[in-house]
Image 1: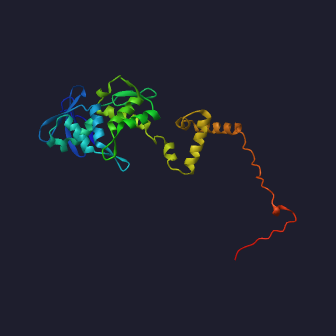
Image 2: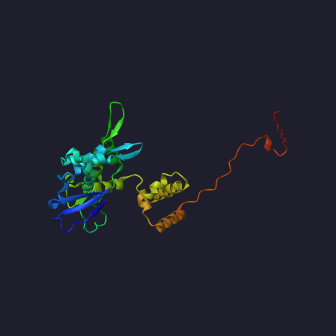
Image 3: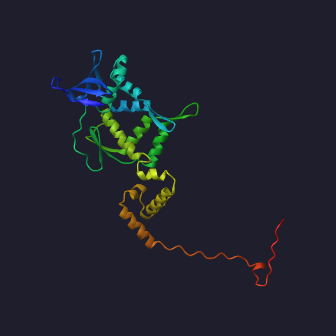
Length: 284
């Protein structure tokens, strides 16, 4: 997608963009709360601002797990954006690209300074997050999975993501009800929260999944330091390499040496007698 700046002849708030080779002429409403799109028919279509609740409902509807992978129905999602603004169905195919652009934060410029340390920028807001706990995740998963009559189980992605946000989101700045977030801020916030809580988010996680000598060495070292310090694995992995070396050196110095194994004694038999003659009988 390419976005062209407004030409001198365009009205204030008017922009021209190109998506997949197709040009769109747009005009932003007051406070960028809506977008007017000029269709090829000459109609002027108004797209309302895409909101948090609509975004989560659309994700739940159009993101599905298939063969262990997440499959996203882009056209279905764009169709929901257009239906939310009551766009005529005859214009769906033409306006789907601009609908996706608008829902993902199109026309919104972010000139804010970087967020404070420990915070993340999520579109129009900044967020303070924490990882959710194992019990919080288990509770969310249990509440989000339903069993059908045929015995199959289905996950409500919307319910699961809402539970994850409730557990991980500590504060928003400026303080904003989640339902007031636009689609771009919602997508960015979900991306940060899912990335924070996702298994395999650290390079070390991916190495451990390999199940090879390097993975076993990392697991042994990590568990050893976790036990010695009472820390979580991610705290160990965040240490400077030199600090890990120092810790391992100190552990080697204070760990008791393993005792030398004593030879295993066995009862003496006739063959142990110095004058014994041992006859070995072998079969044919």
